[in-house]
Image (tube, rainbow, N blue to C red):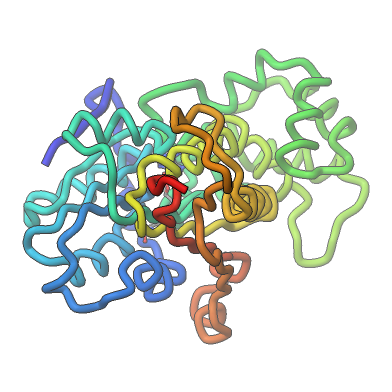
Length: 332
Ligand SMILES: C[S@@+](CC[C@H](N)C(=O)[O-])C[C@H]1O[C@@H](n2cnc3c(N)ncnc32)[C@H](O)[C@@H]1O
């Protein structure tokens, strides 16, 4: 059990971190997609939970993996990593990696692993990140305007807001939040004297927003945009997906849960491209006469009504699953 972190010791855990829990979304469906054979004695491979969070998916996977299997758990978040380290203390199959899942090839190779049997990712933020106001993700709870998943690296949103110009800020709100009133909101944000409070920022956005929708806080899309931007969420997802082409063994399985259309569209298009036989540009294989398909029969699964009733945060989740074919390794 190893911890990889450039500056984990410098990062501080929130004093409230132990108070917050996470209801795992699409738990059985995701684990079944990665491990179709549910008999633990036969599941000996190497698996990755790319977004450990509080370990809901990991714990069920571990129940279904044999004693010889390995599970590498990854998260950017210092508090998630603290929970993962506790799990690893009691289960020798677990290896903990504090890094972005965009760096999976290099983080896995540090553990002597080049290919794996299954990868799951449950994208976005965890409930503890949202519910702990001091993390700055929520427009409903007061705290510093931080929004970093990895508080040991990068700059908080407050610092970025000090530096950014109106026009770049508006572009971010539009691109990552699909906020149609981005210019007006960006101007209002840039007129603020300081960015010390999420509630103050949310109030300024609310006042600048001309078109409030029933049941939705007017700052929802702007907060989403700033969070996605500061954490490079879409860039990380693209790199992660591309890496699965070489990381997954033939017949290896991929399961990705997303919570908004910007992510889901990318996953869908990636799987479609590689299920129709697009050849990765950097693959040094002789071009076969027939183009290989990397994924067989991708599927999209939504949470059941019962799950949404039980955990309303699951309502926007989509699980996309795919099985890596062995075609690229065959000579046609
Ligand atoms: C929805 S939660 C996962 C919850 C988890 N499946 C569970 O059952 O507890 C998403 C987690 O992914 C992490 N995360 C998001 N983007 C990441 C990235 N690029 N690299 C590593 N971790 C990331 C977040 O810090 C968060 O802890």
